Length: 314
Figure 1 (cartoon, rainbow, N blue to C red):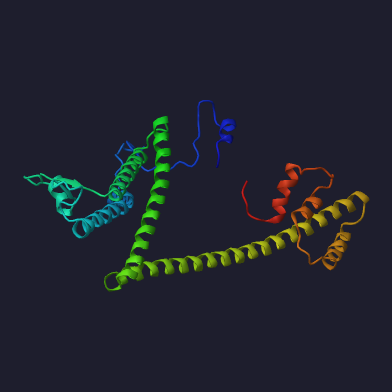
Figure 2 (figure 1 turned 45 degrees about the vertical axis):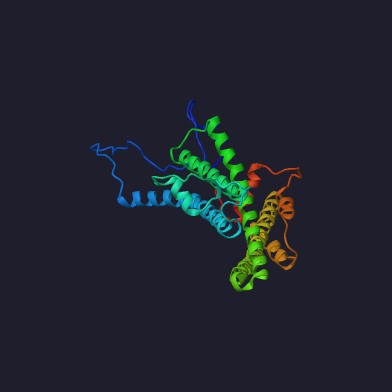
């Protein structure tokens, strides 16, 4: 059963129906006999734990990789381009390095007396990644606890939709910029950066080629599936049209008082006069619409599916 319109007519007063609901946990369930507690197998717990872990890794790992890449760029810029003490002439302002991060946030007993400078690009990457991870984990938490659909939950999910769109655009732009830098660096310094530039080009070319091949294969499969469906439907509609014509002729003969054996004549004539053109739904409509109305009756519509023999339930 799909939809909720039928529930208002069929269910008793006070009963409601929610469509497309999935049950992930059964709490406080007991057997009807013996009142023994329900015990779930260890495999169920393993599968649930693996599902949650995969969801968490899907949210955290890509963002962690982006943060690590941004900090690696910061470290390279700090050690190669910007020597200590050259930022605005302030000797207490030093560029941020990897070991500065561990000293400031980990467990160093002697924090650094210097102020650390971070590139704006790096700060944007870190802030965006942490924002995406935070809102993703919050939405995952609401999903797993089956939070009721209140206004705050709907606002959070809508915000997550906007955040994930911005996250995709930001990361695609980031990867495009980094790839362009690597290709340019390969041209300027082939000895050191040529493998990276070639890797970027290979990824782009291979991705485009494989994507084009997959799209072409999907198009061919869709065309062949459509041809097969059209051939089956043509055969079904041709048989249905023949049945409709035979039934109509039999009814006409019954009204005129002819023998039932005369029904075989139009079947042979119909087989000989059968056209090779494709049968359209309009032909079926005209054959069923014996009263020349603008629409079919429900009985005629059901009769169509019986004659088509499509094995479709109501």
